[in-house]
Image (cartoon, rainbow, N blue to C red; front, top):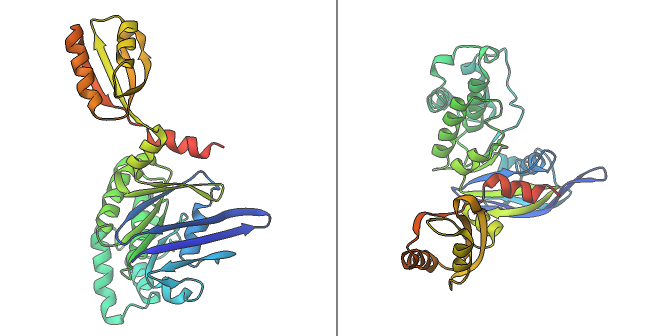
Length: 308
């Protein structure tokens, strides 16, 4: 089920938390929603889930307006807020049964559905414990279980791995990838490697405005503006090599990456440059020891788009 956000705006007093943003999440996509603190991520998620109403614009869940059909659209959404709202005095199994009932699951199906969620989220050994006795990682699993208990077609996850250790993060990441095979997922996080490992597309929001939309590779190419190769050539004078690289037809710019070790950043306009560099080295009896694509880190892209 797809999600279409059309020109939504939300203000708190004079401050616009969300400023006329629009985007679409396609059925079956896992989308990473990034931005600094206070950028408007959580507000946008709350509008999608009908916890908040936009001042302007609308959200469509499978073609249904959340403004006109808030009760209906909520049925299709599972939501894990940033502050996981759990009842610490309840045992896990009782809490999930309670969540199943308030989500309108038929009484005859509640037990089977709870058992399925316990299996999927790896809570079998913890199911009779009180939630307050669980570690942070297992509490997050309980939060995911309650978000999925009614088998929604859309999952909205706000910082699902917040406070978890690396092993727990890996487990939750794997679970989200598995869920993404069947569901549409919007995932908010500050852990950028997690986004690259988990998400099909990335949205970056800053000061309430959407400033980027694309796959990690697409965002890197936009940030670089051109293909860049890391090149290391031995047995030659660095200045001579520098001038020779600049003469190649496919090269648009050459920069020293490390003069001492004859390393260069070569900006190019076609893949033909690889053959040209190899031929150049053979002609001059130079040893080519590195020829690799340069990748802009997602952290650098994020910083560039959100620092101002």
